[in-house]
Structure formats: structure tokens, C-alpha cells
Length: 128
Image 1 (tube, rainbow, N blue to C red):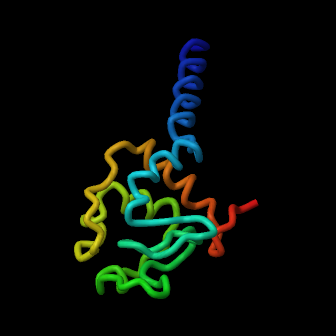
Image 2 (image 1 turned 120 degrees about the vertical axis):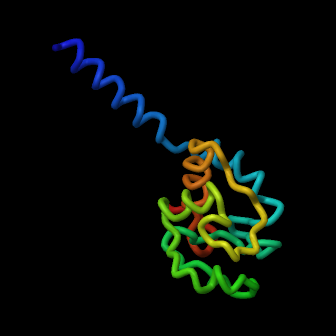
Image 3 (image 1 turned 180 degrees about the vertical axis):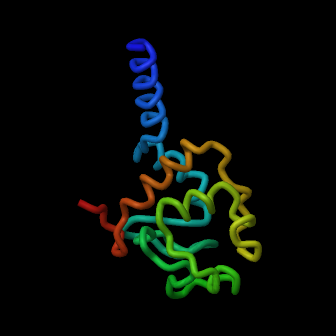
């Protein structure tokens, strides 16, 4: 019985470790996004909107960016769950999105990417 409890504890601990987020790895993963998106103090809209202040932001509202009607009307508020779902398959979540990225297949890459992107406030500074 004791062996079973220890084994269950190790499995739970390893599952938690697998879900841990790494900002540095997320920054590396963001290089796939950087041709179209930017973050940080000098962030500007490109082919996609700048992503500062994404955590808690309503989809389709960045000034000066021309969103698809489906994105503007999606009702999405970006948080860890909505971001991760979207990044797996953007068109499955919002069929009319103008984003032509197929999505990330590696869940850890998505977790790390969220850790990186969500650290930026609306003005491009890093949350303290």
C-alpha cells in the first residue's frame, strides 16, 4: 500500500512539472510568432496585432488593427485557457480568423508561450 501511495505521489508531481511554464522557452517559441506579432515597449501592429496586455483583454480591440468580423464578434476574453485553446488550432476556435497559422501541436510550447506573452502589461512593461 505504501508503495502505491509513493507511486501516486510521484505521478502527480511529474504531471505538475509537465505543466510548468518556462518564460525563457516561451520567448524562444515566440520567434515563430514574431513575423506577425510583437510584444514589449516598442510593440506595434504588424500582420497581426501587438500582444501587450493580452491577459484579460477582449479579442478584437487593439486600436489600428483590422480584425476579421469573426474575431471582433467572438466574445473571447484572452486568458490562459482561451489562449491555449486558440493556439492549438486557431481556425477551429474562430473559423473566420485572418490568422493563417496552423497552430502549435506541443502543449508545453503553448504553456511556455503563454508564460512569455502574458507577462507583458498593456504598456509593454513586464508585470512585477
